[in-house]
Length: 132
Image (cartoon, rainbow, N blue to C red; front, side, top):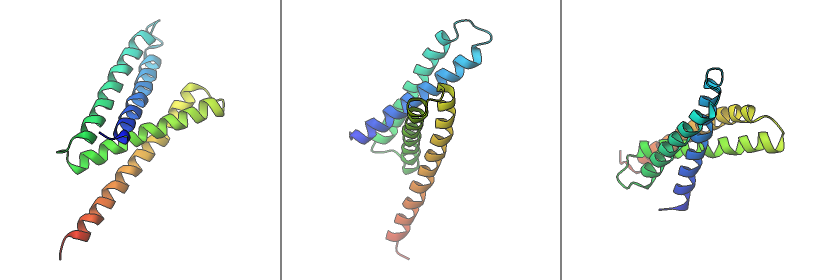
């Protein structure tokens, strides 16, 4: 297993934990006094599931190319989300929710761009070796 695979899976899991935990906590805030007691375990569970799926899809030898591209895109989205979140909160002094929202938007865009780029580069390489 390569270090890149572990890094992508870890970033995807941490980013999912932050997003789901914050979203559930904020959604339940008006109705439950200790909404973090619900949001944090759900965020951890979702982060574990997403990180595990990325790890399984990237480490598996029999995984379809489209699934590998999707797992890589999710990992890249997680890396970008965490980087933008850290930049917004720690360097620019913005609030955590602003950092998560901006990080999520930029991360999703980066993940979608990565998926499209990988899919197109894979199509070009298939066409390059296929005799006509």
